Image (cartoon, rainbow, N blue to C red; front, top):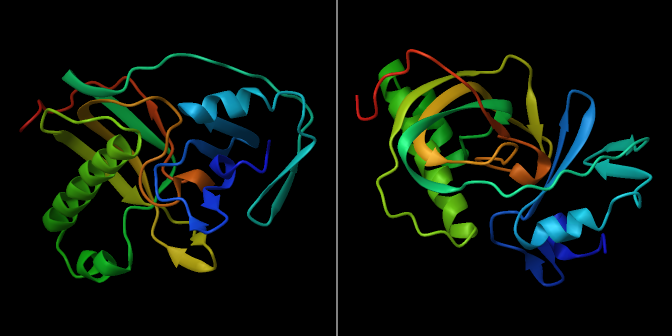
Length: 199
């Protein structure tokens, strides 16, 4: 079962180009495996069958397992929700890194806002959901993390922080690059004083 291409997002004839149905994260020294749609059934079948996991270069011994299953809301919303990045969000790629570096603060914020909306649209498309309302990020309060973020031997800029958006996103899903490796994991938070949508 672990050989299923949903677990590693690769097919025998190349890369699987869709939003990953199985995502691996290490959070507070615990390994979290999230399964979405058909990935949820695969993950539930792993309970008590894994003794260790290799994520990147790390070999993680599994001493105890817990399985949580739930239906979650996903998609357009009439109200804004607040989310925080639990793991670094890899928003920038080679094409936009230089432009980001040369931009002023306001332009950087607008650029990251557009990238975040694009990440949500890409996730929706990859999960077969048709977005019918304009996605509005009403607040984006992120900052580059100080510790280096490495992806396949390349140093990346990772962001932490929070945002508000008129879109329902489940906890522990990833946004941005390399979500199957645990980057960009989000969680809903309660936040006061966030500007109204569109402001």
